[in-house]
Length: 65
Image (cartoon, rainbow, N blue to C red):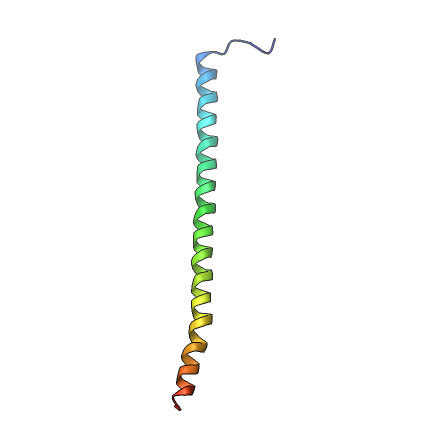
């Protein structure tokens, strides 16, 4: 039968394996969230530079420098 009784050691081993899997999944999720945040910051910096540099260049050119 598939419904055998587990010993305390077997039950503890299964619980420990489940804890390890949950911890690994949590770490993986945190890494993914951190990478996403870093990517968003990088994109924002690129956008600020892409919009700011031409604006500054045009202001210098319009003042006759």
